[in-house]
Amino acid sequence: MTALDPSGSLKLIIFDCDGVLVDSEVVSCQATAQFARSLGLSISDDEAHKRFIGMALPDVVRDLEAELGHSLPENTAFILRQNLVQIMEKMAEPVSGSPKMLEEIRRLRMPVRVGSNSSVQEMEAKFTRTNMTQFFPENRIHSANDMGEPKPSPAVYLYAAQQEGQAPENCLVIEDSDPGAEAAWKAGMSCVLLREDGKPLPAFWPQPGFVRISHMSELAPLVERVLQSQAS
Image 1 (tube, rainbow, N blue to C red):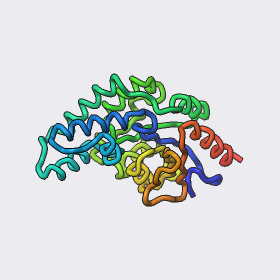
Image 2 (image 1 turned 120 degrees about the vertical axis):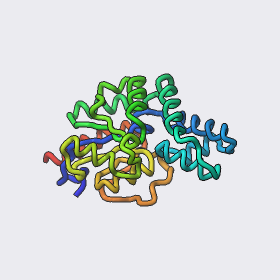
Image 3 (image 1 turned 180 degrees about the vertical axis):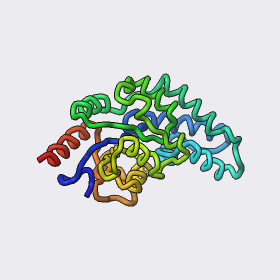
Image 4 (image 1 turned 30 degrees about the vertical axis):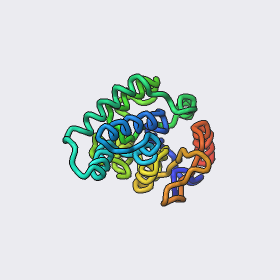
């Protein structure tokens, strides 16, 4: 039984941040591509987006090290993260439809949390810039990076559920990346994947309790239908 089944019990929504709430993936991948080119690697912005989307910065650094054939300074991921914080303070924008969606989810009185590969510091910068702090106070944002368990590890989602006092089967994850959806699958949670029509789905798709939407405006009506079916 999943959180989306009529006989299930949806009690918590856990949002990914980048690509779901904040439109930061393109800017982040461009910054990573620029850094890679400064190392002498030939990586275009488009290639970086396909290659690094959804990846935690330590994993990105390891990927670059493998291509370079040598290690980078130990503080490379930290430097990249601080650079991203500064960029997001000025350039982060909400994903289309997300602000209205959050208002609608709040109207449904559904508890929400965030589980992201971004650091808490990055998320705070993004949410401040996009005026989403009102929905996600500090004690409701959780960082897989800060935990040392980046997605596709399910750790950050399991921790968010634990903090809410909910079992995994009562949780719905909102994701846009393959590693994030895999993390939800491993956590035993339902998942709504934000993915444009025609784009490939994760290799493990489909799974019970997994659905795809193409725009964030579809999420609140979906949640409302689920809650109504479970109340009947």
